[in-house]
Length: 303
Image (cartoon, rainbow, N blue to C red; front, side, top):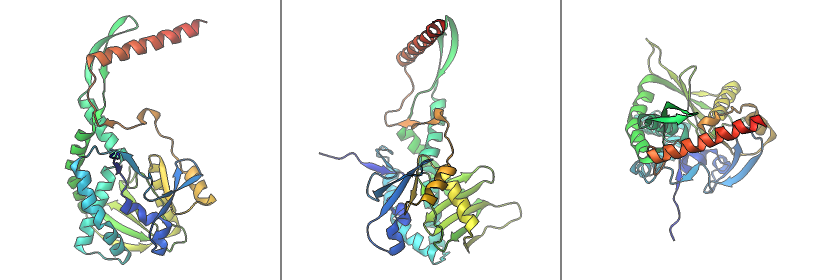
């Protein structure tokens, strides 16, 4: 009996850098998983159900490509960055990995799905409260179409990271380590900065190049405020979960304090493995249900 594949939208090779074993060079790997806004964590092994969903990518070829290329090379890239290696080969692999991690998780894929769903939305005249109105009915985007968009955008995203940003790898002294999340690569709207923790003791920060400036890539010792800022962005930008190597009251309070409420209308996945536009029959069924709910509400108000 075959098992449903678990597609890791955050690769295990990356998550290993945030386990207790990473600090001691031991085998295995345990994570403490915090739900956003909650100071209580659950201990899980790296091979448990962490940062994955069944058939999230619907067997799209790019998922296998990621697992056979950039994910395989990631431990070498991480080790090289710890040694402050700036060779072209390491930077090339780094930009491919970061670009993929930005575009392959829920946040960007849901944005792509909404874009595709709106393009395929059906406009239809329907009856509402006894009169005809124009309605726009949006279905679910198909996972395959979303992944085709992702595959096409990935090289473009990688090129932007290389050409439009200057980069700094922040190394900390393990006094206050970096967190990560189920959406680890964040684009900060106010400054256009790109922020991504790389491991417990490293994080990558990209600043947009201003006119007249030159591209740069450097290493620096992370000040405490920089560590807190990076962790704050990580917590605020997560979808649902934050990952750490330990459970402490301090980490729990930090995650609870920096939680950002999500728009409930954007909850859930915006794509499906059998996603499609709505049929006329589905639209009519929705309108019948909606009309019945409105009638029930009006009757309740009369009582």
